[in-house]
Image 1 (spheres, rainbow, N blue to C red):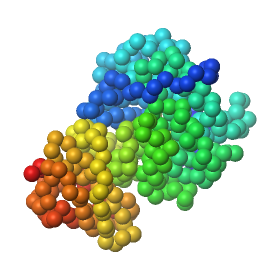
Image 2: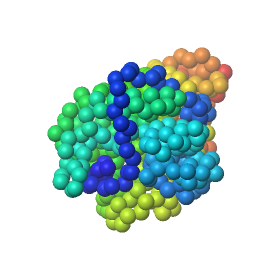
Image 3: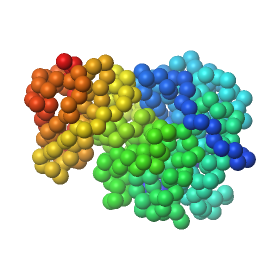
Length: 392
């Protein structure tokens, strides 16, 4: 794969594309088992050694995506022992092991939308054509219609000028075609440690990619996305735990239904499990994951429309996600810029929600006043606040 930071070629993924299939229509897109559980929110880690499954589980990770040269019997046995599920390649070994419930989904090879390395180190050729991805999807579903298929795309989802797409740079029209070959569409862009001025420091590009991918994927497919938490390939920059929390909640507010942490570090030295080697980041990620698990039934409930957000100053916007669950009303809000701001939230007239009273700020041991369905709060740069209003 090509590292989705700045185009460095790094071989980190030993997955194979499913062979093309004859042209039957794809099976219906169902998400079975644990992924359909309203109390389960997928929080994954990308391409890690199953020997670290217990450490990741302690950090709130409940899913592995990708297995190096796997799946193998040993890898699955290790994951099963730790109560960890996996989405992996449907290669010959995967087909042999497809009755194992540890496997909850299949995946394509990574980032087919990027320029592909030629054999023998002879530079890069064009991306894999979307129609080949669709053919591979048909074959995967033909072999096993019961599990969803994940397709992870590169940063061209959020950044049209991403030169790593080669001859398909600035061709966003490819993406509606790519997502026809999956049940779960995902992508990655890592702005906190990016080295290009078009992206560097613009954390909201993560959210922009989620929004675009949701538009392309349509309501019948789930959208997930990847989150940075190491230097990756930039020894001079990396996200802080505060920025990672903002990227996660930006993603969720824009409608992402699954988070995948990219935890490899390549510079200044290679660390496969970079998250586990960084105590501060690990503590921050664990805290974010704990909140998501606690709120999983809320996040998995239908999104409500009609909330209005105004900020002062207006060039420091705040975005919000409105939900109701078990009678309570929830508002999840995140500052979209590296600037402090004050936000006023005007809520629609909802069943079970009082128009006046108290707003609980989750995890912060404080309350705000609700007056005529509105309340205000301050946000630090990249701030995140989660609110609950008790039923009438």
